[in-house]
Image 1 (cartoon, helix red, strand yellow):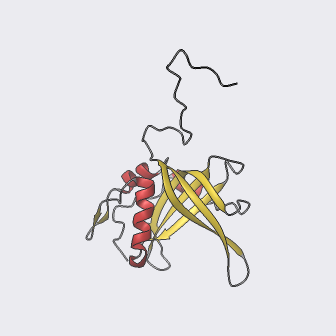
Image 2 (cartoon, helix red, strand yellow):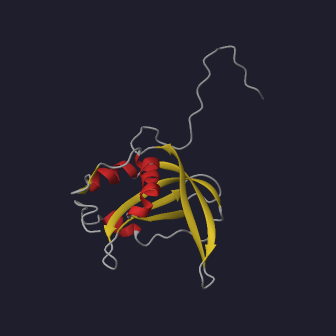
Image 3 (cartoon, one colour):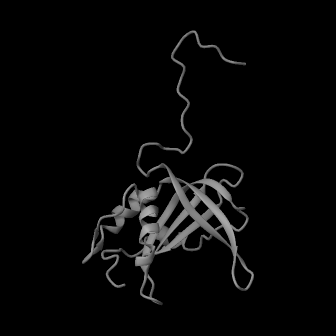
Length: 167
């Protein structure tokens, strides 16, 4: 699919460094809150298909600090899934032109990195019996640059002077 991501820039140092990050196999199946630490897209030389990768760091709970990686191929039979991924991490599908591909790579990356999402993980086995992890992005907590700052909501300050501390 040549031309699917026209305008993709050469990976930055951050993209290259995150290439070695894989899903932590010690993270059990479950639901987690994670921040998108890196996002990248490139055309595979092997099969000429554009791939995208979300590198997520768990930010809550006992597995905080561990990584999950979500991959996708930018192919027609995955359009609906890809639309959901971009909507949940960017807020909308990136602008797309059939002749020129997606909008500016840097703008898409800047809009995704820093987003906080709820994810689900599950295990599956390969034909050879190796265990792998599926990572599903299910819900948006906060978009990148939304000013939310953190996935933990602030508790509003009490405004009445009659409020009593309940302990």
